[in-house]
Image (cartoon, rainbow, N blue to C red):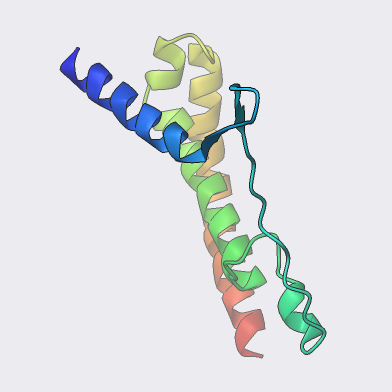
Length: 119
């Protein structure tokens, strides 16, 4: 309760800075807005990517293949998915057998993608 009163008091203090009385005695709120800097010096600096972190496409594709393979291992061998009812026991057994084909294929794809990068 004390924290609520303190935060309410702080909110009131912040609002009181932006409330100015007018001539007729009423209070009105003023709004401020930031102006954009118009700079025509460097047009490339204005075009910023939507996602600023950059990662090589090879690394992203290797990660996707690895997550796909790990998904097969998790679904087939953990037993969690069949226990909560997402997949049946028969599907889990099928995924265990399919993992013997999918995992070597994923490892091959990961290494072949890395060899493409070197070439």
